[in-house]
Structures are given as C-alpha cells and as structure tokens.
Image (cartoon, rainbow, N blue to C red; front, side):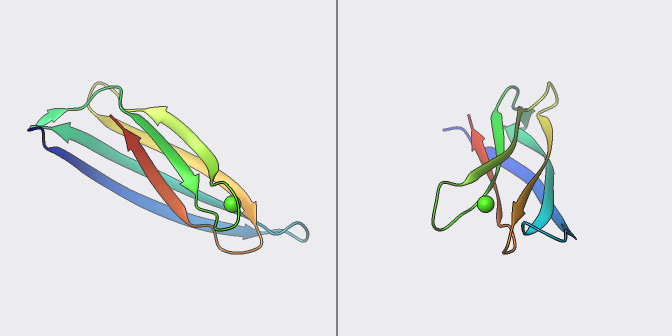
Length: 89
Ligand SMILES: [Ca+2]
C-alpha cells in the first residue's frame, strides 16, 4: 500500500474592480511524497468551486523532480472564490 503525503498551502487575495465583480487570485505550493520519496509528474489543478455551474480551472501543472509544485490563478466573481486543489496520481 502506497502512502502519499501532501503538503500544501493555499493563499488567496482579491482586488476590487469597478465593474464585473472582483478579480480574485489564489496560489498554492506544495510537495508530494510517496513512501518518503518525491512523487514526480503528478497532475495538479487549482479550481474555483462553483455551486451553480462547473468549477473554474484557474491553473494546472505537474510536480517536478523534487515532487514540488506551484500554481497561481485568478477568477472574477461577485462572491468570494473558493479555491480547491486537485491532485491526480
Ligand atoms: Ca467561479
């Protein structure tokens, strides 16, 4: 059985615009380990969770040779964005 450990931190901030809602940004960085070793090439995606329609993809990438990843994305919404990190192994 493989044990995968995810260390991640999501930070978010917003910038008010005069029209069309608020441009909001989120970023996440982390490291993926599998049995103590870096997990390379895992697909990572940063979404904004939406309740009434499909979640918005804000950024995507892969873990590097050290198992590390960093994503930054943004979305314009009238309400506060709700960032979510998906990891596909
Ligand atoms: Ca959204």
